[in-house]
Structure formats: C-alpha cells, structure tokens
Amino acid sequence: MYGAIKKLFVAACAFAAGSLACFYAGAQRAAGVAPALNPDDLSRQFTTDPGEGLVLAGGFLLVVALALASAGLMLWRQERS
Image (cartoon, rainbow, N blue to C red):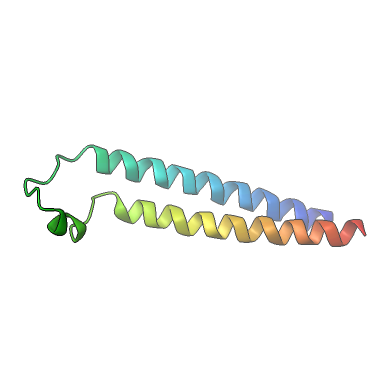
C-alpha cells in the first residue's frame, strides 16, 4: 500500500510542477505582447491574452495535483491507523 501512496505523491508533485511551468509560460507569453491600442476598459474585458490557454491548463493541472495529494493523504492516514 505504501507504494501506491508514494506513487500518488510523486504524481501530485509532477502535476504541480507542470502547473507551475504552464503558469510561468502563460505569464511570459502574455507579458511579451504589446498592450492593446484601445484604452476602453469594456473592450479589454472581452479580448483574450495570448497566454490565457496555458494559464487555464495550469489551473486544471493544479486542481488534479491537489486531488491526487488529498487522495494520497487520506490513504496514508488510513494506513497509519
């Protein structure tokens, strides 16, 4: 059982690292683009940033990492008692 718990924690760490990489790459891609010429706040709400997809993927990977870590923690606590 400890092997499965270890695999869950390793997978959670891998997904968290992938999430951070996606967040970083998305932020770098969005920062490298020139700002929009239209200063209207309403029109800026509906335009998409170039790194928005990567940030969205990073958020999804972070949710998966948290789910795996919580599953590993629950199994670890069950195994200890």
